[in-house]
Image (cartoon, rainbow, N blue to C red; front, top):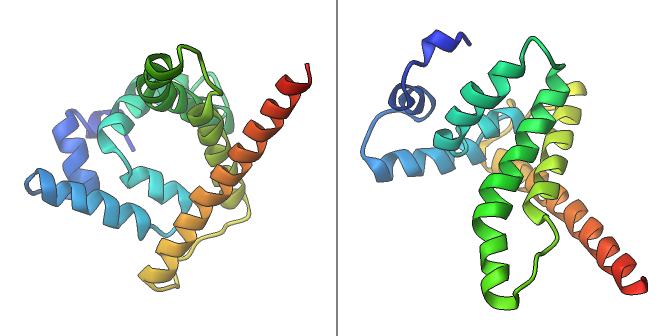
Length: 163
């Protein structure tokens, strides 16, 4: 994909999800993402607005300097931290408990990136399966990463309680 081929955010979203009103595009985002044939394809459809900025302002500038696997993990880490931890969880934790929390979104997204790269490496995709199986597979992918994150969070909690 050439950088010049997606000059505007609107063009990028239409390319990824098609045209229509906001609700049609939102529905398309969920359907296309969960019916994706691979974890990589899932992320091509998921949150195209943030994906646009991450692709063109973070991932692409690293292309000639950093190997792809590191770029992918770094992009997912930044996304997990800024979009999920910093914007969603930490303000909520401060309002309720006046303390910081385990960087759940960041760790989850790191696991998502690693699993996606491993699935790519072994050539796993669900192209030959029905949309229902693809949805279950993508939910499984998200769930395995979530389970690993919960395991790490539990381990961190156990370690901090012992200290």
